[in-house]
Length: 380
Image (cartoon, rainbow, N blue to C red):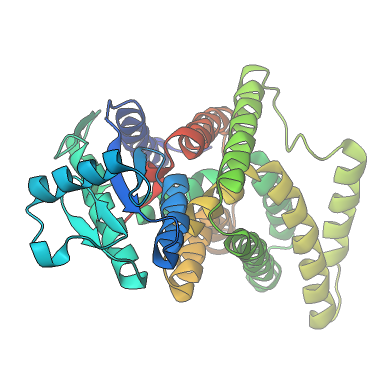
């Protein structure tokens, strides 16, 4: 049975994150205006048009006003008004493209100017939110929401992803069978190999999914599609909570469960070490397929959020490794009790049920944010 010393810290962490999400998602904010003056025959203007379209997809809370100046005297007059309002020097007037935000103006366009525009835009978007953003969290008091970061999101999602029946039941049964041998050597070989293989395979699955999203790039279609999947997955997990029935993973039927159990018994039979390791690897691969299907909402949502951060390749994989450490947290606990205390540690069915509710609510919120407020999931 899980003790309170494990439940309370994790539950407080969830409360802090939920408070931040609700506070941010429903805060009232105005659209950030970008005024773009261009010529229909200017190649640099055409490039900036494509760039601004990408910004619109990435930051839905902006409004881009476009003005063609070579064929419209009204737009030329409007541009002069902007020159006066922003105190643009005469030597910089008369060139296109020219872009105005609430904080600054930009003449011309290239990659560097594009980066400056996006940086200025982020500052404008941040200025639309109350600063600092204070939220009240039970037991912890006031917390500045600006301190909620990608590492914290990674830890919360990884932990929740790991605490589900589909991710636990095989290891718990495997540990029970190993304890019957009363051999720490057997526990270390079989249990250690299983946990290592399970973590590595889950990491590779997530890496493959992340690379697929990075290849597709940051288009609205994938963002909305993943958001819809998150909503569906969240509703499914909440439904599981409502109609909860005690037992192991609902994805695996009795026949398949019996085959997995028989495979575990075969692994524990006396045999050469390479044969045992190979059997554990095969078991871990099959279990990972089950786990990924059962909790696909979390890795899909997380990798989509991660793909939107615009960080380096090494950082992407470090975050995936960080996620997997927390994903394997429950396995480390179960394995640690078996190896050091030669006793079985299991999480209560009540805990499994309520972790399902927390997971469903969180994934539902993240799915909604991906669809309606994706900028809140970009951490810089």
